[in-house]
Length: 113
Image (cartoon, rainbow, N blue to C red; front, top):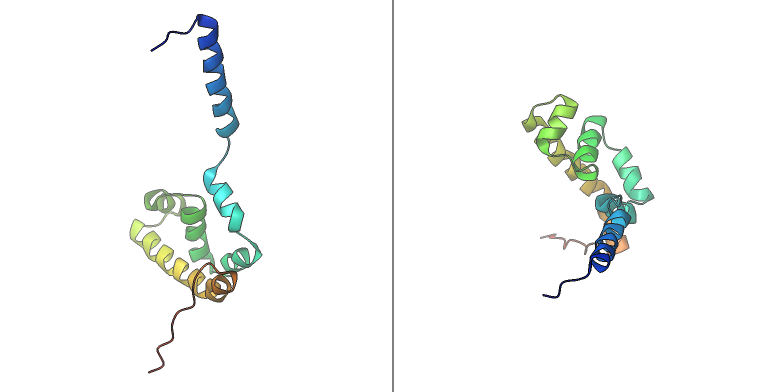
């Protein structure tokens, strides 16, 4: 490995720091959700009953663990898991047609027989 003179090593270190400074405030989750969290999704989320909306937002949008969400809401972890499951299910039902229309998912095959 080639040893760099002190000034070149300092420049390299500053370059690495500059890149870090540019991305350290970027929130990948916020960027990801912001890219597709459009009006229809927000409307569906707002339409959830408050106990379910709270946990979906805390878990899926804010990234809290079950334990963290339970602490914030003052609930047992089991209740958080149950509400999250049910809240996601409600969102899935509300957004199914929209997801098909936007091409995010394929329509389910109907079993009429």
